[in-house]
Every structure is written in structure tokens, then in C-alpha cells.
Image (tube, rainbow, N blue to C red; front, side):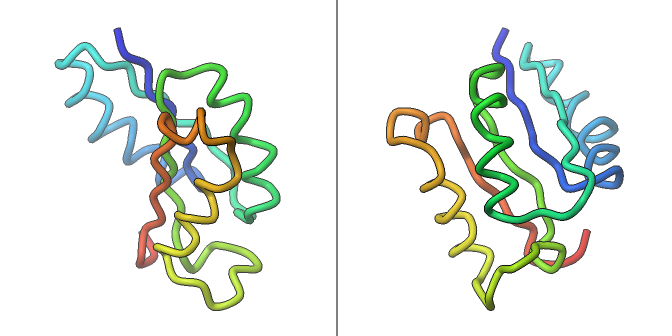
Length: 105
């Protein structure tokens, strides 16, 4: 069974994963687990959260709102996704799929 961890911003995103994404992937024998950051999303915080997630799952993705992102300094969702990818070494980058939701979820 493939294990995918999804780092989510908060309760709304966690429930979206639990109710809509998890059931679909469970039929494909893929275990999806949302891990809530409880808000206050920033690159510094993500830097500390990613290593344990990458150690616990086969793949990790993110599900954060762009406008909930602290200290983004006008960066676009795509720029932040690239910044998140650069937080981990090249070997782990192949197992990390950053995603920033353009608009408030």
C-alpha cells in the first residue's frame, strides 16, 4: 500500500481530504493521511515540518491557501511551491509535491 501524507493548513483542508480525497484513493489501495499545521503557514515552519513527514510517508504533498501564507513577500503560488521544494535535499525532492491553493479554500 502506498502512503501519502498531505500537510494541510487547518481543519477545513483536513476535512476536505478526509471526506473527498481519502475515499477515492482508498479504492486504489493508497492510504492518504492529512497532517494539520493549524494555521500560521510559513517557509520557516514548513522547513521544520517536512523532514518528519518525508520520513513517515512514501510521498508528501501540501495543501495551503496562498493568502494564509505568512511572510510570502508578494510571491505567487508557483514561486512558493518552488521554495518549498528547495527546503529539502535533491533526493527527497522526488517524493515531495508542493501545492498552494491560489484562492482561499
